[in-house]
Image (tube, rainbow, N blue to C red; front, side, top):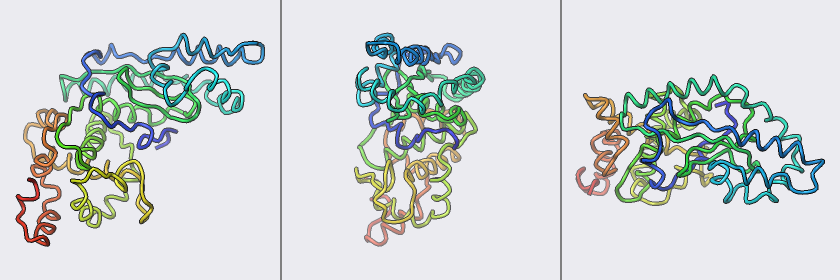
Length: 309
């Protein structure tokens, strides 16, 4: 993807406390795209050489919930921001006009939101905040909404697919025992439904590798999916082979896709995908790994059904 954000490492969501929010709009056309923080940032930036005080104090004080959500672990405080901006003035300048084309993207994103409303009438739509940080994060999801770090953007290519993925996380309520399978269904589900409503695939590298190495990966995943350790599948690898990051997105997508294709009522299937209650039973119903599970269970001299207990 062309968007200068690394979704698979920067938009990590580890808890369902972000999902199923009730305080967001349920109307796609009321969803907020907040850009005032960009204006405030450049006002502060242009005062740097004349001001005796830190001009980014105003940026922080006037900040939207997006700035506040970006402060901990990213901006830290006005002084920390000032130090980085002074050091990297030229880099920040590259993004001064990057939001100029946002209005056309906004129309596209609202159309994507409307598509989700069709598939999932209960959908809620979080605000999207465009803020400036310290070049240490492309963005995050917070209880207040989706936050995008503008300074990391070279252009807006791919942003609609990225927001579609994050939008799905706010609809998900996946319960059950914590294990690799659960997190893969979480991320793969966001990819699947995000692609369904946007027509955009945002993890093409890992998906290509996954499809080319399906047998090897499925055999490995069967032995790993009940574990809480997600290394080599989500958010990083041990470098044991040539695999890219985040193959868990790929295999989660494949399981979700297999389940979806089996259901006659597709709209009901989307609701079930967003509200998985038992990841192991969902996997069983999908049938995607049946051949590999049967082979694995045979090697252990156990029957197929025992795998899901």
